[in-house]
Length: 461
Image (cartoon, rainbow, N blue to C red; front, side, top):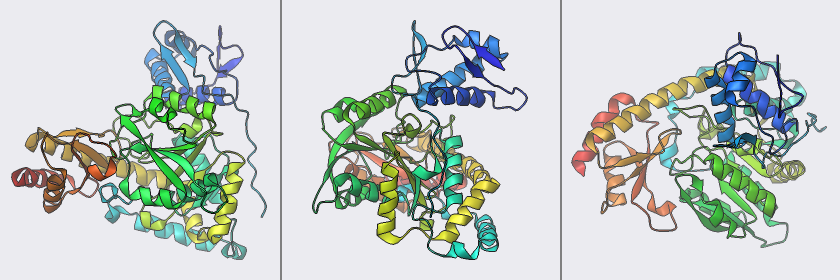
């Protein structure tokens, strides 16, 4: 047990050095201190060397913990000014965990390898659900989702995505598509023909646009650069909400930078706008630890949408919306008005996968496999198409490949498909001219097939 003196009076960090994961322990303790108000916005943290000496750990461990929280937007760090709690990381008291009584993406390049679906584990989970469910559980369930799944998902997202969730604010839906559709309809209002001004990233998933517009959104496109969405441009749109993919932007693969995360949340606080966070590709980070979700920074201004479409399969149609307090009950009621809720057996099965650790084990195995496939594809492009620039490689199941000047996207995408590589031109995803590019999915390309496939593509071009 160690007490942080000086600027952080009465703050305690409890670190068990024998349990491993010391960096995660320190980051988790500090994150909780910010959320609970024990670390106020602007408070300065001890120098990493001082805190490391106080805790009896290496300085590198503390530096990594600080960097993780800077990346998540909880802390800011400037030369000469030290490390401080970010202004947007508003203090929040602990919430009550009580239950009330009784991808959408469609882009072929992002599809997981469905031959890797854990059939035996899923079958075992279904059997467990059927053998343990009470007779009443087969009746209409809470439209927000069965309580055990909401609890397991809340715990999982808090542990893996640094989300700040209580089960009552999590609503089970039929995938991200339905979650977004319900949320946008609520933002648009109840009057016939009412609309909401929604900002979207540019480029963005082309097949998502009809869903958003038919749900009541008037879209305004905001440019994305190497740091993510341009918040200054966003501020000029007068949008009431913004849809972002901060963990791995689709299609460019950019991760929203710490500075942009802070700016985005400051914009939301100033304007009262809602941030719709599509937690796209968050499970599959390969070269560094996952970056926490935006929702963990300010649950009152972010609606977090996710699903099991990538980790398991899109055909399960199991997803969730974590909405701000108060708004979440409106989402739950809209879910009830729409179709009375999701199928219950699959919900109990997913809850068992989460509780038993099988979901985590499957994800770890798939991360290793997808990383092998990514590495093989990137190496093949470097060998056979060195003039192509591969971006967005740190996460996800696709890469963004920028083409040499004058190269036609459609021609490259067609030749790639002929060579057995899933690829799509990027032009339909953009509202403005840019460097020619194709979006390539590597999830279904085994390592041994990558080199001959890219070699065939190079020969065709």
